[in-house]
Amino acid sequence: MKLQQDAIVLRRACSGDVPALLALEAQFPGDRMTARQFRRHLHSTSARMQVAQCGDALVGASLLFFRTGSDSARLYSLIVASSARGRGLGGQLLRDAEQAARDRDCQWLRLEVRTDNTAAIALYQRAGYCVLGQRPGYYDDGAAALRMQRAL
Image (tube, rainbow, N blue to C red; front, side, top):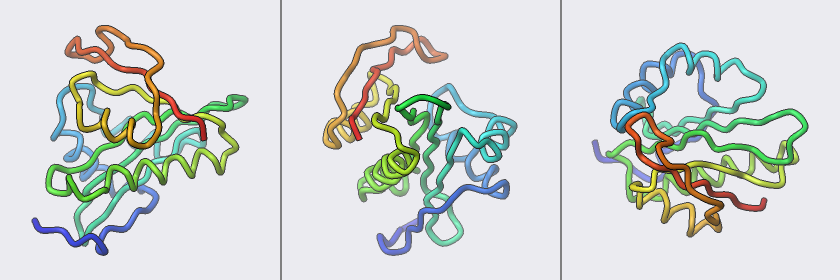
């Protein structure tokens, strides 16, 4: 599928997006969310799920968590379909998540990223995220995670 940059729209996810979100998740190794988890996050006041849509296709998504009384938000997931990579969509979803965290008066955005996901690490570093530490064996397959954060 050939995508046009101006055809991508970010919007809040809805329950009708769950099958497409599951298909997006299937493109990546391990630690996949279930339909039940997606539905729970869609209706949670402590979560914000955005999708990137191009025509009828979902080509990306982000999931942001908020905790009452905390000055930080957590970017739990940021995913871009293989067909949409290299076009700045990851950065667009990240900036959108950062703005949502600012809108909720958060001072920090934190995340974990697989140590072998060099493209995502580069995206976060370009956006000003710094490494806080590493979590060995963080993912289901035993892969380590980098903990990163950025002041908002």
